[in-house]
Amino acid sequence: MPPKKKRESGEEPERTQEVPEWGRLLAVKRPRMPLLSVFNPPFGPWERRYRRGHNVFIKLALFKCERTDMALGDVELKEIWIRNFKSLKDVRVKLGHFNILIGPNRAGKTNFLEALDLLRAIYFPRPGSEQVSPFLKWWGYDKVVWRRDEKLPITIGISLNVMDYGVIFETTFTGIGGAFRLLKEILEIKNIVRLEKEGKLLRVRHDRDFLDRAWENILRESEKTPKIMGRYIWPPEWKRLTEIGKEGLIEYTVEVDERANFLRWYGGAASDILIGGIGISFEADRRAVVLSPAVTGPDVVGKITTQSLLWAVRNAMHRLLSRVLILRPVETRRLREYMDRPVKETRLSEDASNLYNVLYTFFLSRRGRLPGRVEAALRDIFGSDVSVTFDLAPDGRIYMRVYEGDLPLDPPMISDGFYKVLVVLTAIETKPSILAIDELENSLHLEAIERILDDLMSADCIVVATTHSPLVIDRVDPKDIIFVERDKEGATVMKRVPDPEALKRRLAECGVTLSEGWLYGRIV
Figure (cartoon, helix red, strand yellow):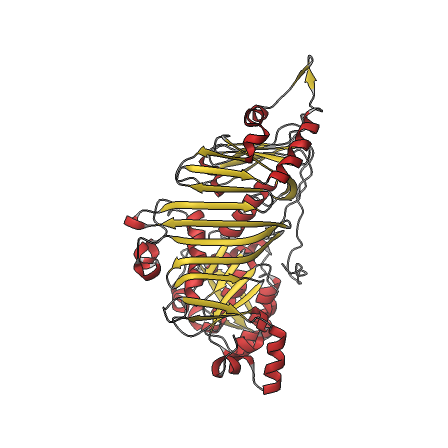
């Protein structure tokens, strides 16, 4: 990820929330979070325990914590592969911080974005749609599987770095018969542990070299455990660890709920303790024991804590998948006509229908100002005398008003391009993990496209955008472009330029631009 951009004028400085030493109880509502987190007192080498709860996330802090607002933190998405989704029969592509997909119509560019949306919907459905099939928006599973062959499963996998550890996450599922089923899920931390769930069975396999080192550290630290009346005080989790033993941890299988998955703690209570620099995670109602290094990083609510690497990976996956934002082409007519009562919202919907509420939330939090990035871009593109404010209709509904100097412009008078710029800039400010934009150039003038590209390249998120615009292609670096086309079978093929610098020299020698070389020649 690129270094964090310095805050611009008009933006409030980041705030660090410090939690005192042992004794303060923080209760934060966490809707639909099947987890109750409790930090135990500093008793022996054990630092933390998690238990199942309802809709409250409670943390009792033992050490100083800092809040991080970064969507991904120490996470780098490296690669994604997709099999049997629409035209994506077997696609594997490396992703950078900024990615532009170019190709002819029906090549599969939008299908790639929709695959990202499907992965999010499987693990983090929109509120109210938890019990609905994730394929419903496409009218059923047969509409999204390769060649409408319902016998085929769909697989989506990602490779990423979490705190410099290589991680692979892959999920395979089906919707045959109208019912969603998770067939297989793999979570592998390279050279540490591999968790593979298939049906009702969860198979855990530790790397032997790591297990030898970890077990030695655990035994060494366990001797320092405090005694009461001459007896060691063991937590309940330690009994389970000693029951399995070192040899039993190398590879074993436990039974779990068929609907359970890694991001939901395999469907049961879970706990996490730290001993001698090793995190011991108890999953699936503590039937499974997983060892991994202890690391320091953001937890699920963004606070910096010491935790097991397995839980750090889970938190990273949570932040990555839950905050994916897919922006569809903006329906400006709907935005002009839509008015609603003000509601605090911080996430933009994929059709930007809640644009007013998200902007109004920013507007109030900054005491009547939009974020500095948004204000600066609007002035650069539309003029220094342009400003945005909000008014309430007589019935209490909110609407946006734009001023050109002293001239007020109500929603029916605002241009399509203004809305498009505002939507993209607002999307960046909501800090998604992945921002995917379909048809980036729609409704935008050349100067507006250049400015928007600058903001996207400096955004604190992974950007994936599709385009047919020669200006966009010529404005970006060849290393950021992914060429999309179809083979003779009709399957999507995605390629990057193998040597971007050599391509630049070749284009300069021929006196043509990248868009001309792509349109009239063969680049990859």
